[in-house]
Length: 187
Ligand code: URA
Image (cartoon, rainbow, N blue to C red; front, side):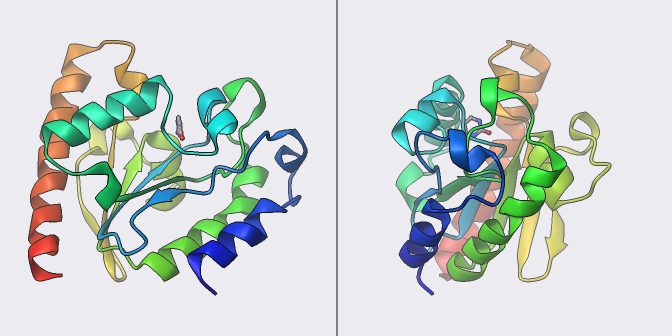
């Protein structure tokens, strides 16, 4: 199966109730051969309307961090744990995540990234470990099978303006960029 075929299959998904309320599927965008993959939480309103992940306020902030550390957005792959927007942007429910995880697993299998960076605690709790503590463990790398993983703060948390979190995010993103360049050199 190709990434496009997977997207088409995902587009008719009704495995959880969010399938009935989405405007658009938000499958993922970017380089299908990316060495670096970002995984957020779930689409918000702008993403639901456009069908593209991280295009709203949080997305614009993510773009700034990517620009600052000189990672071209079009060279990475960006997706979410959930492919459909939860009503009123509430946290994704466990059951919704369970239903949606297989799409992410298949995306990872097809893209075969070297690095996966979780954006925020929801993604880290699902992909790294259930008791992940983002304030303590952000920026720590773990090897998981064929790729390395870490988590950084979710950009929407950073929009609330905590300067300490912003500084830590910069440090973490610089480390992401350093590894990214190493893998790109060897690609
Ligand atoms: N927040 C997320 O976690 N994902 C998006 O795509 C947008 C906002």
